[in-house]
Image (cartoon, rainbow, N blue to C red; front, side, top):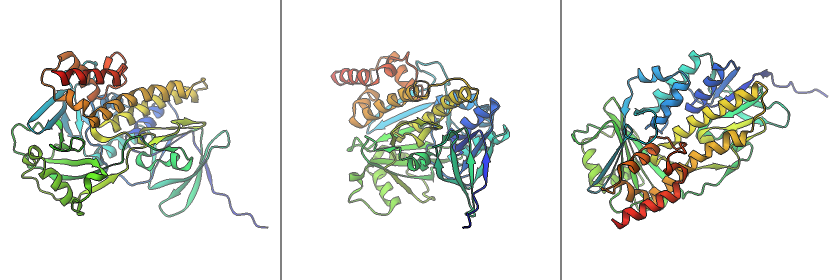
Length: 416
C-alpha cells in the first residue's frame, strides 16, 4: 500500500489568524517581547472594511505597539468626539471633556489605508505576514496545535505552534472550525453603507466628530456620517430587517430613501456625489461559547461583535489584543496563567459595559440621556469617557454599574 505524502509542516511559536488591527497589534506586542510570530491573512491588503470611526482609547493600544507616530503622520481626519441629532435635537460630546484620563482625540479612517498601515508597521518591527493564505483545518488534540494553511494557488502546508490567536474578524475562523459560535441576543439588524464625495457646506457640521442621526419617526433606526480628511465620508443606516420591507430593492435607492425621510441628515448630504456602490451587511452581531481554550484565544470580532452604534468594535479588538499578548507572553516564558481570570473576564467587563449602552440606545433610555439639555456636567463627563472607549475604567460609576446607573439616569431625565 502506498501512503500519501504528508503535508510539509513548519514549526512556529505563535500563529495569528488575520492581519487586521487586533492581529497586527497582538503580533507586534509579542514580537517586541522576542517571540516568533507569524500572521496568516486570507486577503491581500489594502482591502475595504467598515468600522472607520476610532475611539480615543484605540490610540493607547496603537501607542503600546509603537505605531502611534506613523498613524499620526498618515493624514487621517482628526476626531475629538461624537455628535447626535434627532429632528431639532442636537447633542455633542467632546473627548477632551471626560472623566477618565487618557487620549483626548483620535482619528476617522478609511480602513483600507489604516489597516494596511498597521500591517506595514508590524512588518517593520519584524512580524512576518503571509497574505492570501487561509486556515482550512485545525487540530488542537495534541500539546501543540496544528493548523492547515492553504495558499492562493491551492497548495497546502501545516503549521505547528505553541499557541494560536484568532484575529480573523467577521471570518471567525476558529469559532467555525471548533464549533464555538453562539447566537447573539441582539435582534438581527442590517446596515446599508457607502462612501460619498460629501461636499458638505453646512458651517454647523463638525468634521472632527462622527455624526449619529436618529430617524425622526423610527427611534431604533439610525445613521452614521463619518467624515474623512479628503472631502469624502462614510454614510450608513442601521435598522432591523422589518424596516427594510416595502423599500426599494436597489441598495442605493433604499439608503437614500431612509436619508430623505430624515431632514436634518438629508440637508447635510444635499450636495453629496454618490459615486461608490452601496453595500449591505446583516446578521453581524455575534457571540461565542468561550473566548479561549487549550492552545488558543479569540480576539476582537472573531469572538464577539455587538453593534456599530458606538464604534466599539475596533476598540474591543485592540483591547483584546493587548490583554491576550500580555497573558501569552507570560505563558510562553513558562509562567502559570489563567486565561479566564486574566483575559476573558476582564475583557468582558468592558464588552458588557458597551453592551449596556447599546441596549440603552435601542430601547431609547440612552437617547433620553444624550438629548437631555440640563445634564449634570460630571455625569456627561462619565458618559463621554465611555463614548471615548474607556469602558474598562471601573472608577467610572457608569462603567462599574452600567445598567443600573443608566436606568436611574434615564428615569431622572424623563421626569425633568
